[in-house]
Length: 358
Image (cartoon, rainbow, N blue to C red):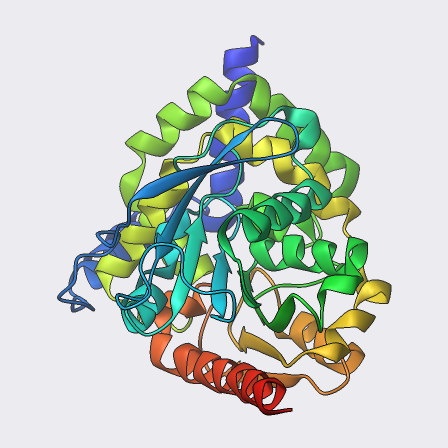
């Protein structure tokens, strides 16, 4: 059989594992999703700021946007806290829509596209690692935050943040004064849940590795099939990204658009990084700063147990479990996520105030 035939057969077979040919079920779910109400009067993904480029250590250009406080001007002050939001796997900075809407004009905020994602440049395959993402975050901090920093990471963004903790613990309690870890982990992840959610839990390791490797060689066909199978992809996204089947259609389509815009070759490039992740023993520096951990109880990609493990290993951390929410809790339940972030920002401001009066 030709490579084209093997790739096509692999994709269709993987889809069949989950749906078992249930075209009627897919069509029904598509109609249900289509009837759900829209979420926001501000169009999703429409928030923008003048872009700037941060150059990573290996020369990859990162697309960055800064929402300044109006009274401070473009560069802000040396004592002004900056919140840096770090997005997850196969997404873009636009996934922070509800947080950006809430904090625009209230808090100096930085958003950027991870390497190979969104408007950032493509990374060499060998640099598609969690360690490199942590180093990229350091470059963004150095380039955009003259004062203290609060870091907010979702999913893979949280993993890169934890890598920064591991390799630069001296920053935490000094430059970095607060951290939020949302729907993320420091290890023990079944990579199939992130990389290839059509495959059942446990179908990982070397078998999944060979599957990903084979599919990557036919990434042109995978991307074509993804673009053609919109109804099926919408149902899969609803199942794996959100909670109890109540996410409005515009949110489902918004996430699906970001996933579709991420080439399958990029998906494959990052897969080994998740399999190697093991950083639970390197979280100690987070005890030096207020740390908020957020998880949806219906997250099928990074289970709640990962957040509980983080909480148990970070003294003084807070844990918010949002009942019924899925992996994209930042979009699905923004009010609860933002309330937790409000508490974190307040705790940081109290530290800054105490430091100024000391």
